[in-house]
Length: 168
Image: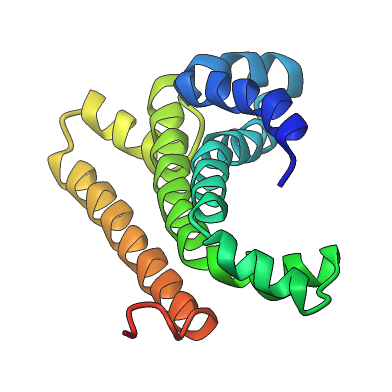
């Protein structure tokens, strides 16, 4: 809806999307210490680009006929956003959220294995050092199972929020 905003933020999002999250994790540790703050920021930074790209794709995929019809019927900008743009782009936004959660989860686990920060990735790394195959397999199982649970929850939320998706 804003070519100026797209021209300003588009290259920044593309730049951020091209960086592997582990590339700036060390910088986050230097700036924010070794507690939970760098991991939380890594989650946000890693998940942000896929969500933005999917949201923009969803907004660009809205037929101009819907927007023009709403404007013809007297729909103001705020109402246009809440009644037309957001509902029409929600399926794509959910796709971005699902992708973003996967990227964020992978990034945090990888950062734990590289930097030795406590967590499932750190447990797997330590078990690998001591040839504890059972602990490594358990860690992988926990990661996979937690991913399945997150995916299940997101699918259920998406079905409630976008009941029209897939209906012809």
